[in-house]
Image 1 (cartoon, rainbow, N blue to C red):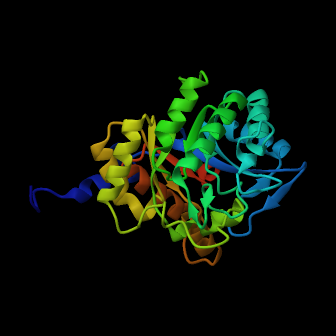
Image 2: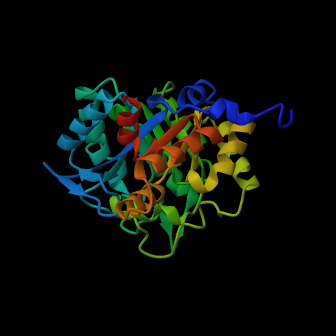
Image 3: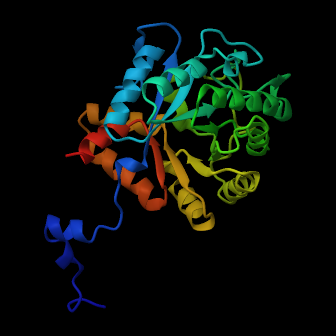
Length: 324
């Protein structure tokens, strides 16, 4: 097909033509809304680097879950900020931990929203790393034991799905075995399978109070230049029993999302992380970008790359737009 016989602009000339042949569609069904829960009561503390997001006590979190459900968003992803932190991350797996209390309250008051629990230890350790330290290094296998206990604790509280994000070797298999042994064979795992050591996490570390107190996370999170390694990491999680695989961050790693979708026959999630969110908000606030249009274009690109599920702090804003 060549010009002048073929003119692609014929099918772009008005909105109805464009709607009719649109290849990629974003739906509220694709969205997961991340939320931060903290200790105390009647707490709703703004997160300065993430406008419109808050650290919330459980009573406010329940209201936010209700609002999210009413907007048609099917799921929330919970991150906890405990009152006390220690070397063993004990706040992650205790029966009365912040996440466990939040899950019980939400499932009691808003039973028809999916509650996904992030399964990492960085919010609970006093050093901010994602596992148990041996000297100044995160010890992989002792961390697996704590992750297993945390997964079972969250399942007992009523979590609908757990999401291990620490990038420990063998974490999916260990968690799957622990859940099965505890009688939670039907509880799915959404694995942070290709999680890069990214500079785009900065605002999240303020929100979750989880910045490492020394060093960085490059010895366990992935090196940004690597693509084939992501496929190896995802393959391991699939073989270990992951039900959903994830790429994080999303926008700087659209190529990884696309490769993962091409190579694996599992639902694929992508995390539109805090830095991606905050950049758009900051530029829109300065009048440099149309925030709404840039947001929608960004999320469509993630969907177009192959993501079935998009975890995003824009979820409620997008749901509002899609409902119009």
